[in-house]
Amino acid sequence: MKIRYRYWIAQILGWGLFTYLWNNIRTDGFGLRGDVFSDYDFYFHIANGVVCTHLLDVFIRWQKLERMRFGAVFTKLWLAVIGVSILMVVNLAIMAIWESGGWNAFISPVSKHNDLSPTTMMVIIFIIAVFLWHLLLWGWVAIYFALAQGRVKRQELESENRLKQAELDNLKTRLNPHFLFNSLSSIRSLIAENPERAQRAVGELAEVLRSAMLSEHQQLIRFDRELEVVKHYLAIEKIRFEERLQVAFNIGEGSDGQTIPPMLLQTLVENAIKHGISKRSAGGDIRISAACSGKHFVIQVDNTGRMENAASDEGFGINGTIRRLELLYGGEAKFYICNLENDTVRATVKIPAA
Image 1 (cartoon, rainbow, N blue to C red):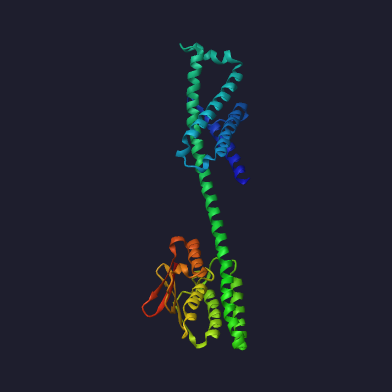
Image 2 (image 1 turned 60 degrees about the horizontal axis):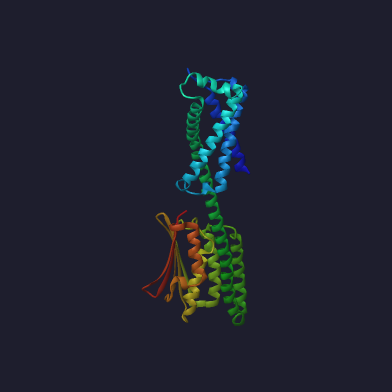
């Protein structure tokens, strides 16, 4: 409704301005006149332009031409412009005949000053008038298409953003149960072995869930908040693995203020424990590093072990991480996971620095 409202305002003002300027063209030059506003002919010309070009607008929207390439719809547009030009000239001719007092009075000045027959002269004048109005209407079409296709592109972009947002929300809702399942599995294994440690693990889980809920509706959070969640999660796993799990942090200066997607670091750490530490009877080490490197913020999670499968086989966590990075950063974010020489797996995320 808002777009249509602007359309009608633009139509009336545009044709009003054009008609006013046209009426101020004189044989002795250009001059502004105030008496045109009291002439009903002035308002007829405005109405003729508004109504006829609106018919062109109806045709364009009916055929959905504004959503197509201009070159692909040129023939249809040209025929429509010719048709509307003829209609406009016919309307103007009817008005001129009526103002002259009839057909004979209208053609009388033409027949007196030309050797051609009045009918032939009228046909020539009609063709010239249609051609001139046809050129004018192409200017209207050019402005119309520029605005309409700009609007279509904005609508497509908004639709794409809504789809991305919906997919991101879906990924987040899937990540939270995924993380919760892993945490509860760890706590369940402690209940029979050591109820006191299980109780401590539940407390740590409560802190993790509280932090997760605070960032539920955010697409990006500060790195230090995400790191706090990860530390609580690692505290749960530390209770489970005891000395079999060793954790080290190497956080570069300025990292705390960087922003990352929620659960990004959490997912990398979960993956390191699930596919690395938990599969080794002796356990292993996890090293979390983060630092700014040029225009990028780089996060690395190293864990003891060997990666036997490709990252695409590592389950939803890694696949979800890759997809979220694509949606949020496009080609500006990188994720890769590989084996290092010293029996270590390294997962690296590189995103634009804040």
